[in-house]
Every structure is written in structure tokens, then in C-alpha cells.
Length: 301
Image 1: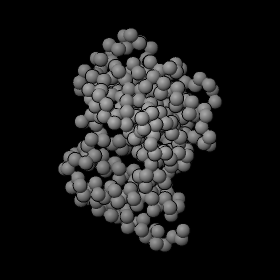
Image 2: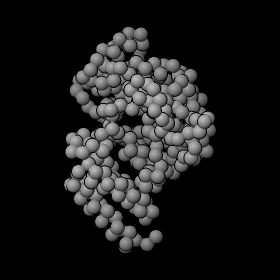
Image 3: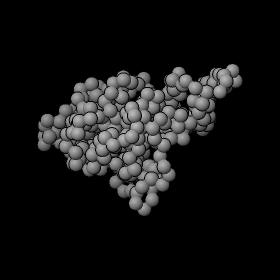
Image 4: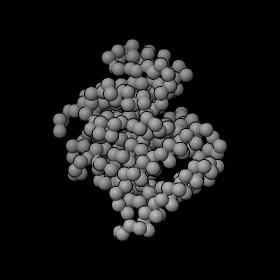
């Protein structure tokens, strides 16, 4: 492995006028210097585009893509990825902030990990409020900011299916080959990360860095905040995408243990369908559950 590989950081911006310069500055302030930054403004309706243009006056060599219509995260990222040249890739939201040594720690993990076929490394994250004040850590930590419970590593496919293993997606770095082999993000989905982790975990191993790598801003209008709203259009889009992810994961399954694991995810999503008053989605999950149970009944362990 090249000791100083190029790292491409793709910063996606949509209506983040108040935060985008902090995100961009955090890339330039890294202790590791061989970084390619690509910015995508996804047709923001606030002043983000102008804020980015003013920032680029100081850094004119940075690549910036101005979408002429709102394309969403998946398409925006894939388009930027096609222009990138890095051996390693980071997907950075324009309201998040990388700690200064994040890239250095991620690359070190790739260079020193004992896992074969390692595709993705990730670490812990400090969650902050809109005003940048501390909220909590993604993974609970001790007084030294180290993970209290050990984080599963290596082959985490079953752990993802059973919701026992949670990847902190915003703190991840992936090898370029991972995105290339999986054809990037699924552009038919409302959100990208969970589907990508499942597909990646089917083919690659994961490693965990027990360090706080960045700050993630918790905003009221974030996708995750829309997960449990009742009779909400965006909530339905989110949860229908999750159904697609579950059905795709089921196609990837190869063992009885994996089918049993995905039942746990299905039961969790059924509860969400009830909570958000989505009977059609609930019945779709009932159909999936029935299909899997039939497989389990007629399959030997």
C-alpha cells in the first residue's frame, strides 16, 4: 500500500449555508495532506451556493459541482465519485466537521489492520446540536473517550442484518474498489448508507477505530429525524426505501443463520410501520416474514 495515497473527500451540501464552510475548512485542516476535495451543491434553496462560491475564491483549485436541479444524495455522490481520483473515499455531509487527525487515523487503520479483504474503517463520532454544543457520543465512551463496549469487526454481515452491529457511517473511509465493485450508491433509494453497508459487508471486512473522528450535527430536518413521524410523506419515502433494502439483503443471503438474522430487522420495521400508521408497508413485511419462515421450515441447518 502506498504510504501517502490520495484520499478523495466528497462534501455534499443541501441548504447548509450556516455550516458548509466549517465542513470544508475541516478538510483543509487535516494533518494528512494528500487530499482531493470535491464539493457538490445539490441545488440548495438557501444561500449555500453563494457561500461556497465565496469560499472558493480562496481555494480556486477545489472542484465544485453545482447541480442544476435537486438530485438527492445518492446521485450527487455517484456523479462526484466518477470525477474523483482517490484510492480512498470519504462521504462528508456539509454540516459535519472532521477532527484534524481523522484522515490520518483512518489511513493508519487500513495500513495496520489484521483483517484480510478490508474494505471499510470507521470510528466514533461526537454528536452536536445545531449551535455546536455537545449532545452525546454515537458509541458510549468512558472518561478517556474510548468505546465502553467492544465493537464487532471483520465479517459483520449478520450483525447488520440483525441490527446488533451499527456502523457509524459518517465516520467511515472506504477503499475506492468498494464503491467501484458495488456500482456506488443505489440511486433508487431515498437514503444511501444502510444499503451500502449491507452490500459491502457481503464482500468486504470492516474495522473499527476507537477514536472520536468527527462531529456530526443533529438537525431537526435531517433524514434520521424523519424516521418515526406519523402520516408524513418523507417518513414514508424513508421507510419504503428501507423495505427495498431489506428485500435486496434477502437476495444476498446464503445461509439459514442469515435468514434468521434478517427476521429481526423485519420485525423491527413492522413495529415502525405500525407506529407511523403505514398499513400497506406492514402487510408487505408480513409477506416477507412468511416467505422467510417457509424457507426456514424446509431448510436444514
